[in-house]
Each structure stands twice: as C-alpha cells, then as structure tokens.
Amino acid sequence: MRAAPQSRLQRGAAAEALALARELARWAQAVEEPGSEPREMPDAGMFAAADQISVAGRDLAVVLTSEAEVEEAVRVVGEAQKRAGV
Image 1 (cartoon, rainbow, N blue to C red):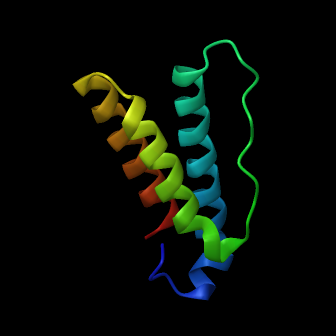
Image 2 (image 1 turned 90 degrees about the horizontal axis):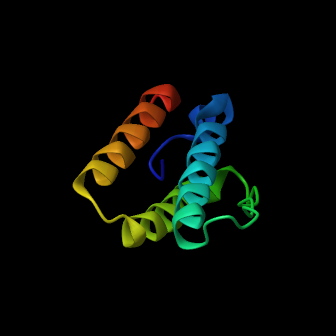
C-alpha cells in the first residue's frame, strides 16, 4: 500500500485497505473485550491506509492464540490484497 501510486489508491485500494484495517481491529477488539461495543477505526485518509493496516494487524497478532486463527488472518489479508490490486 505504501508504494501504491495515488491513482491506484483513488481507484479503490485505499477504501479496501481501510475496510481491512477496520475488520482486523474489530476482530482484535472482539478477542480482547468480548461482548463490548466495537469501536470503528476512523478514516484517516488514503495515505494513512497502510499504517492503519499495520496497527490493526499488529493488535490482532498479539491476541491470536492458535495457528488456525493466524492462518485465517493471513487468508483475510490475502483476499483483501487481491481485491485492492496491490
């Protein structure tokens, strides 16, 4: 994402990245605080999308406890990457 040209970000890659960051953040929150109201990651703009994925991904990686969960997270990220075209 950081190396993606602005034109690709504007064509939907940034929106896909934000959606992925939000999904990863919700997942981490659900593990850390089961039953609590999920907080939504804000849209910080297309140039912050890669950083938002990094933060949410790290937060999720810290709370995952099984190899199956890690494999699922990798699958989710891979699918988003394909949809974003990066």
